[in-house]
Image 1 (cartoon, rainbow, N blue to C red):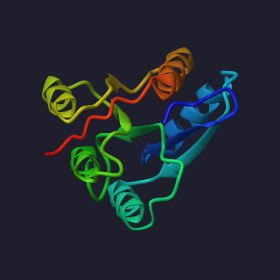
Image 2 (cartoon, rainbow, N blue to C red):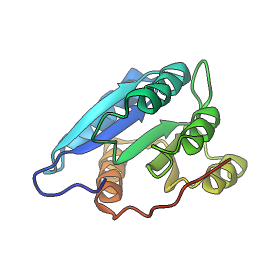
Image 3 (cartoon, rainbow, N blue to C red):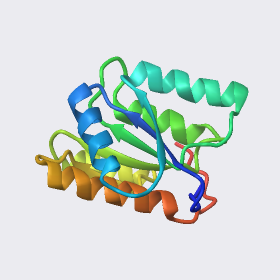
Length: 149
């Protein structure tokens, strides 16, 4: 859901690197917008999150999921595929991150409706710019598309 002036952006991050989570949190803190960050540390936790959403359907849904493509237990593509098959979550925007750019990964994630694909930033200024982009994605109106894989 897009955020309003009073609603914090609910962001779910699926990332196995504590350092990258710390950098993203720091980068988000450089902006004036309120946010709530939920961190899932691997593909198994992400798949459990998707299953829990199916059963309990808690609100509000995240406005964006920041998804590392190279995760332990289940990779980001498996998580993204499961996400797009879940009707209650299929509309959620995804920002896919990779430790190294891959045209093949980029094509595959875009075919699954990823909003943005990028290589993980190498410096703090780039993390801050990425955080700005993530918050902008949260403000975008939802397009009620349902992705099926």
